[in-house]
Amino acid sequence: MIIKKRRLEGKHSSRPKKWGRLEGKLAETTPSKSDGAEVPEESLKMVCGAFYLPKDNPLKPIGEDAYFLCEETQTIGLADGVGGWAGKGVDAGDYARELMYNAFVAVHRQPDGAVDPKAVLTEAFLNTEAEGSSTACIAVLKGNILHCANVGDSGFMVFRDNTLVHQSPIQQHYFNCPFQLGNSKSSDRPSSATDETVPVVSGDIIVLGTDGLLDNVYPAEIEDFLKQETLEGTEDPWHLAYAIAVKALYNSQDKFCYSPFARAAELANKKHVGGKIDDITVVVARIVPQN
Ligand SMILES: [Mn+2]
Image (cartoon, rainbow, N blue to C red; front, side, top):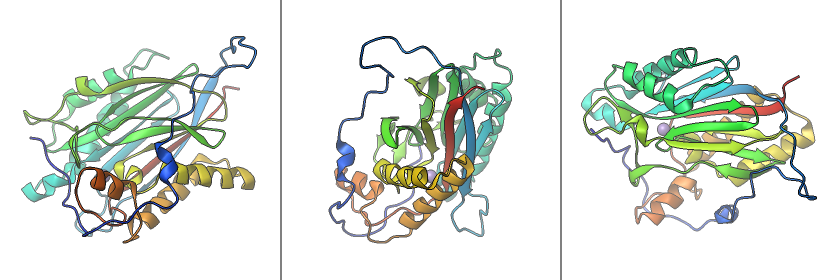
């Protein structure tokens, strides 16, 4: 069963003021030198942190998002149970949590140093029995390449020198109905997952988020935030994840901001004003030299 997300709220929208530049072309992601010489591959690793802010709901205190971090295998992942299941008495958070638990288990069954994110997602999906459905994003660092498998409207961004250089595409059947893994016949399958490889360099910041982040915070806002953090010398990924999640929370509760969700609604000829209240998961990985 393909389940649409929550109903829209609000009546009209306003134009963007500050963040319109996001439509611009993304920078080249491949590291290069001006003299054309090949850049030697650096041995890199991810240092990870995360912050989860479930939305305020006494009936579902842990929300519907789930994530895992595994620095041992250099793998991170998150999932967002599709809230539309609540109308059928199903907590899709159960599906998302089981999926991420199974992904964490699957990561450790992969060959050393050769974790395949799509294989992890496939094994996790096959072992998940809960009712419901969920978006999912798994990212693995191998050498200097970030490999990602993504289903639906969670996703990841890569920032270099405080500038967005890569953003994963969103997969949706139609507005507010993302691709979703699940056990019903019409759910999507891991074979639908995007399979992306992004070269990274030391100093890059990877931000994974559920739509609670992506629908409320523009990448340009994260760029500004990273610039400020650079000035202040903050490097702790847990702190970054916390601060970005709080920004998403703030925007989600702003009834008048022209949020990414409001913009997407407008493009789909739907009406929505302000941020979108949702569970917010932010995973931050800082790319650093191996030693
Ligand atoms: Mn969500």
